[in-house]
View 1 (cartoon, helix red, strand yellow):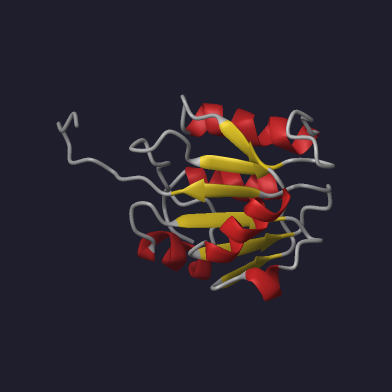
View 2 (spheres, rainbow, N blue to C red; view 1 turned 90 degrees about the vertical axis):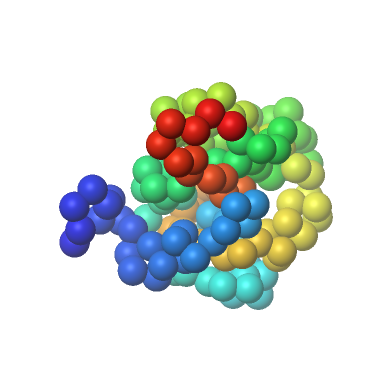
Length: 147
């Protein structure tokens, strides 16, 4: 245990978040997702929900403000306008931890391609379908810097 770090953040995840650079992406995927097949680097967190993992990760990692979008979700049942409960939870966490960012839907195969290209994949125990999210890491600016 460490002060100020959510105990959900295990050593492998902490190391991965720290090793990622600006613009690198990390995905949190649900229990049905083929994480072993798609991950370049895999972190298993099977006992935890995707929203809980997202909340813990965003307590440490900034989203990328240098791009138009930095948080992505899949389109449920082929409908990018369909809003699953898990997407609502993801957006609420983003609003609290990284205000101003919107969770953007990406359809089918392009979403999977983005996960396969991600720096790392976190396999959660999330049992809800489509409980997947991709985050693009931003920067922590020096104290007093504005741009």
